[in-house]
Image 1 (tube, rainbow over the protein chains, first blue to last red):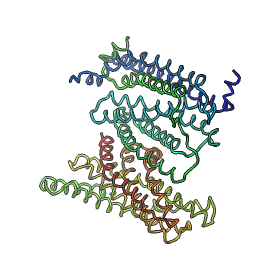
Image 2: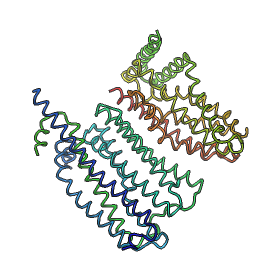
Image 3: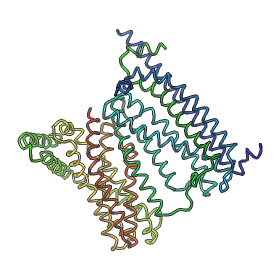
Image 4: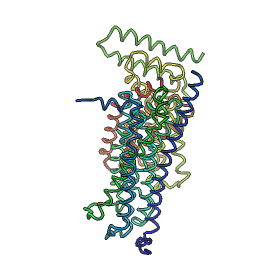
Length: 54
Length: 245
Length: 251
């Protein structure tokens, strides 16, 4: 286990690289879903105002 | 030959519903492939005889770099389709691609530097691949910046689409110039990614993550596409029904 | 007063171009319109001679920065001269791009061009040509002198002139696309740079390489030919893209 974490001495490079990639993957998921949620909310709001105006 | 399926793809309500249905079909396989591939790459693949355990960065660097370029191509092609045939959905696709592509370009640059430090001794090396990635990042930032400068979505779509097409045409020219420039001032070793032939135990995880990341991009695209389609729709008729779902 | 002076030549171009296109269908009315556009732009620019000098002054100023920032030793300056000259030229032409469409967009001439029925592509080519004659060409002429100040030998000067002339053509053409895309925006200077610079990198690489070879006394034909190829590509495609961009911006 220790040898695995040590990555043959390259630990300082391998693990941050994996961490950064994982963060980018997760951020993308959050960002995309956030965009969809906000777009739905905005569309609902637009529909609401149109219903009131109509 | 029936083109109706193609015409349907230009219809925002159809695309909205289709995207919602398709997303899990890409998201879950993507998650599976990425996790399995990374595990295989970290644990199962044997260490490289030259780079030792350090080569394992390839399993995060290569898919990021692949995605950064592939997404730009998708962006450029859909922008061209949107420009030529004036299809709103195509513009929505292009808009969805940009943030994803830019973020993976950053990931490629960071992982590339981290790979470079133990291999070349410096965090940055002006080799053609990293330099091209950096330029690609600026192409993405330019696209996003141009979009941000317009309030009107339609103008933003068309202007940034033209930029994307011009950029896409330039990418081979830029890459060729950078490769040539680098060969003139020959710096030492360039990252040799897996050539000569990698043994299967090393190659299989790589293929898994490449495919996994690609499916991941499609899933992200589908989610963002729904948001972009909503943003471009003014007529309420199908919206009401779709939003209730 | 000023706007009257500016719109008068514009309407005269439109009027002159109109009858030409209706009557002489066979004899390249687009070319005539383009020539008229070039002469109009040159005439207008010469009314404000002060503005013409600004990109040149900027170029020389940037070149001056390097000896002050690096070292007065001519040998050291000679080694960085190609890079310095090309970066300065790139930045100076970026600055000059703001003038390309600004006045015409403001007084409605650009809309007239788009609506005139003349080939907007040819008109874009004409405007870019005029712009290059006013900025890129003078820059290319001044560059050899700047090179001298950086310790470059006189034998290298023809090569530097050639590379600059060809390279600045492409820079103007690429810049025109970005300028057209950012037409309506206020304070678009930084965005203009962000859009133009990545696309200009091949010119920078080939131009600096040609200059470097010229400075060291070697044959510089190969990169010069690459520069020429880029220029040909730009001349064929860029006005098209710029015309499309103008139409989008005017929508």
